Image 1: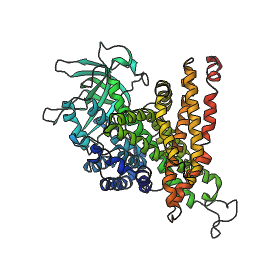
Image 2: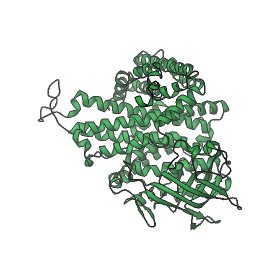
Image 3: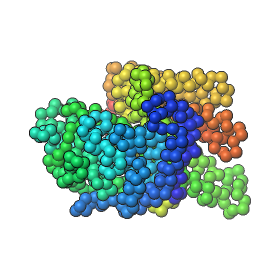
Image 4: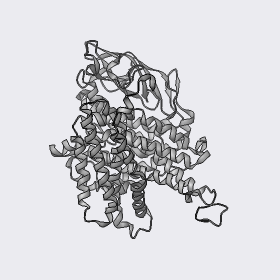
Length: 596
């Protein structure tokens, strides 16, 4: 397996040349105070070194050793504690955190690049900082001043970590039927009792304390989702002076044996009258939790992107070194007994598909992160409102489309290796196993599609779609006089029109038949994703074309050629998706249960 090399050149291209991120940052005074070009570049450089030299060497060993549950709690694989401390000492756990409580206040557009590098090099380990950052975000947005002052500095410093506890054995997506109870106490705290499952990094030995954000119901809470509240429950109680006290009444009952991310402890957590404190308002826990969930969903999309990048690096290196047969057009390497497999059209198909999806995904994650930054830091209320609408629209796409395409990319990478891709020592099979969970947790991709189609598209009567469509239309209009761009603009315009037609069709049909939403949702999300990637590939082509003519490095010419590949060989998938949506729900819903 190739050693991980951080794709810093491509990250800088997307940030600086496609999105002119420095001008974007400087346009918002609050953000300009936190970051400048030199700081951002130093952060990217150092993160790349940490990913390559600290996290990646632990990836395979962590998968093989896994976590283990002992009498004193969960023990992590060899080297994890040292790696965790290295990141803590560098302040990486507070990279995007609120400076008022010790965070660095870096923008999401920069943080997403760092997250990609950490996930690519070691996804199991990389879950810990992402979960902590999400917990901090929820606490900072909804917690009391007292809770924020007591917990955030320690979480940003890496002394304590955070996780979220939602799922129960009988309640996954339908959180309204959860049974975990929170009983109010005279001192303002609550006693929580219940069991949560699938809690990533619910217990470990890397930090001194673990801060659980737990969903639970009061005994007299309204039924369903409207009766859910959010509570902060520390593993170890915290004294008035901030020092650690006695262990809280919670424990890890077992660790799940799972397909991938074996270096991460996925815990069954038991709360036996554990002491917790309310975060936000009573019976408004889902609102507070979704602050974290939406952050995590974009982070999960970045996880998938990281695995796909690692798969591409390994497959590309292998394809250049592995010799098998001769090129269909004659010998390309006459000094060898066979040509490298990269000369074969089918291998090229897989590698170019991977490259177009990975680099398109990186541009998309930056695009979504840019809207997150605008929603947080924009000065005008109008800009904030538009950005918030775009974030709502793009979040399910970022989670689902990026992870679906990332699994596709890792499978292509495994296939490039042939039989060796199925063997442990080459690393590709671990990437396939690891990335699979990204489609499942933080809301399955089917749920993301329902959210996009039902809440965001039909629920807004297409208004949220119009915000995105206008952004794409403005770009197309801005390039109208550029003849070199027409090869990209024409299919982009057609794909946008196709997406608009599908949007209108489903909205009209859903008014009379609610099944149309679920029947169209997954295909619609994919149609949207391919169109969004086309938009971003067109933007990348526009940035690369002026430099491609005199390009000796191959970077800019390669970028333009990959854009052409995407439009020629990947975007046409959207045509069949649109046709599937147009065919409606009847053939899906008419069969009786005993006919399926």
